[in-house]
Length: 293
Ligand code: GUN
Image 1: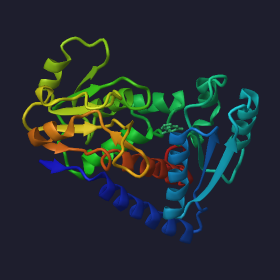
Image 2: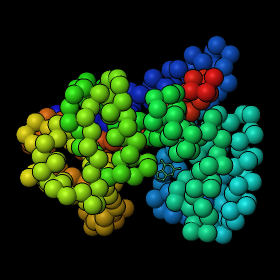
Image 3: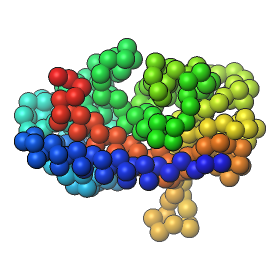
Image 4: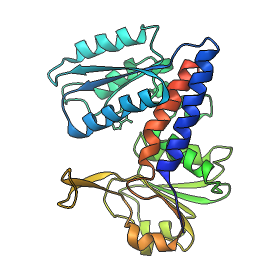
């Protein structure tokens, strides 16, 4: 069994990005600039946004954090989105989700200029990704594709089972794996809460992508000997063994599944570290005008 080291891959990729930034700036390019909009004080969002800002510094990007209290109106936020869309210094920005209930996430996402949508959430980017045109691809699926590539995991002709159909992970993952190319060219089955015979379907999988958000859902009975298992789950559970008082649990029962796998991602340290790095990659691509010419 080979443990897929997302931390190591992420570090390598960040070094590559940092080198590209140095070269780009030395050749007269503008320092890439990412902004993050954070509404309210949700613990998870605070942590993620702080990590995104720190990651920018690490690779030599400029970063801007824009904060609002959770009573900000939809109009105020839309006005900020418009301002960011027209800010020539900014290569990309994200509006951290979830947003308070009185604000439509759909409306905000659709108001973001697709050319600055480094989260890859705008319908234009999702559509372009789906038809195989250049697009910003959302962070988690892109991170998983990077891991598959860097570990040279064969996907062509393989049966890949994606558990979960979210717009951010499951659905784009199924599209990317079935697309022509490497990684890609897989036969993909998307499973979800209404799927019948989930165990039997998983047992036939060469590759399982678990992205449903239920801790330790995937058990050894569901996994074929030699399968590749990618765990996207990051549920916070209380723990008296950690300083913070909580720990992350994946969607896979790692201890019993790992011995059956050819490759598996741990939680933490697997897919997670790659996601912010993918955001950095999208920002660099935006600065270089590599997606939208
Ligand atoms: N909330 C959880 N993950 C993400 C992400 O990747 N982007 C944004 N904007 N919000 C999130």
